[in-house]
Length: 384
Image (cartoon, rainbow, N blue to C red; front, top):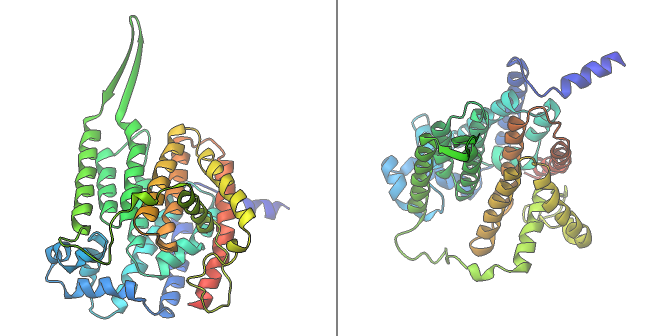
């Protein structure tokens, strides 16, 4: 019994005093990624950015050239361009993504304010490890930048300009990265404001940290750069534009259900349409799906309270993602997974703001999410 308690205390420890555990688990994780990449043939949307980066005339050509038709900001392409200095062979793409995800895993393991068992479980999840770890896309780079932001988040010692710089890079990783960056910037606003209540005479003063203004301008500049570098100069028949008329109760409800199957995916180990059939299980249990959807819309924000601002940030970011999916491009699991990333980041920030709270509800939600995600990871690796 004593040994069992000792093992349990090691697994639930949420504060690392040394790098030993983090480095060992990160090395195991990287070894798994190397094995998985060795058995994964790059898909078209993976190899295309590598070819663009390799054949570009330089970094400016990447920002203004044909890449502008791809719908993604240039950061991932710039990163791959740097790797082409090492090799022009396709394995450079795999090495680039493994390096990104290895760094993200190390930051999560070393600095994440979660129990060790949760951190290991997150690295065994379908969204993080397969969609962003095995499949080499720009979204893994966005995940790394979110981790960097969370590591730098200190309520008592805010680094407003530095963190805004990280969010600016996040804006240049993907459109969904831009949404997450805008959402996380809101968490910095209270740190840049200082309120003072005086009783004689009664007055309430609010002062603004000039660094918050600089941070906001930096983020706005990155947002403008994202829009400029993803908008083709001529009509693009493959991109029909925004359709805000599609926003109604039905489509919003469908987006909410997509969020549920993203947190709690169920995939089968057989079947010819594994990759496209994400609704296979939940589509046969619509009543259960509706109940779980309503529960998640209430429990996810509730798990972040206090402060109330965390719940509002979650609704803001998740709502913007839903609008993009409805009015522009529905996307797939690689896009929907940013709901999970945003929630994970807000859980991290909540634990930094209130380190003495137990955060039981969010821990339960993350645990259930990990169990579903692990099943999908096994199915994905087996089918890849």
